[in-house]
Image (tube, helix red, strand yellow):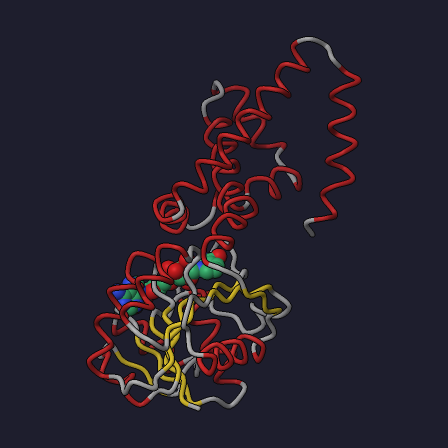
Length: 277
Ligand code: NAP
């Protein structure tokens, strides 16, 4: 099977590397010539270039560009593809992509591998990034079963655990466990930065594992965080407002020395964290 990967960054590069290592014939297309050269030099792909026409011979194409370019990339590659070509994407939101993409191309199935880190670009491509990561597949009404089967198989080959659901349920769930944490973590960093100089610089010396964990996603790729908010706006706002209500409740407990109720909340969160991880 020939697999095309468009957008050779952290996700596209890591995916291409893993698929190439597994013996697939991989064709990598990216925006910049220098990225394609690096992909070939590092044997991340079998063939690479900036010309979308290269994808014409692929059986399955995975769009790994930033979210805002996913639909336009599909539109731009369509003239080069035979109708049986299967297309999927890796975008972190699905509602804004899956339905319009399905309108553009019958054999489109959305996917979202829940893997990544704070880095950006092909320099950080690593094999094994998807090992044991959940991957959500979001077919819509009338998506051909053969396309779903092929997309599931590719993600299984790179080590993902597959979940299949609607784009809407995907977006509601990731708002809670991915997009809301990015905003909370970013807000933690910017709030700390507003502290007066003497306290802030001393705190910076003391920050250790706790701050590393809680600030990690807020200190990640800013372009990705922005697109999560723009393309999953409604679900993110719902979770942010619920979070704000709960934050007010915590403030109220502390202001009123309501230690028993605060202790009860913390006992529950101590118990419930395991349910997510
Ligand atoms: P990234 O490291 O910035 O990679 C994106 C790459 O796409 C860039 O390196 C760029 O390569 C290329 N590109 C940009 N515009 C393009 C275009 N119009 N046509 C072709 N290539 C283009 O970002 P990423 O983290 O891999 O994210 C890519 C996608 O994965 C996003 O849709 C994101 O939602 C999704 N995702 C990310 C994560 C994560 O944690 N990072 C997790 C799951 C899913 P050049 O060097 O050629 O410019």
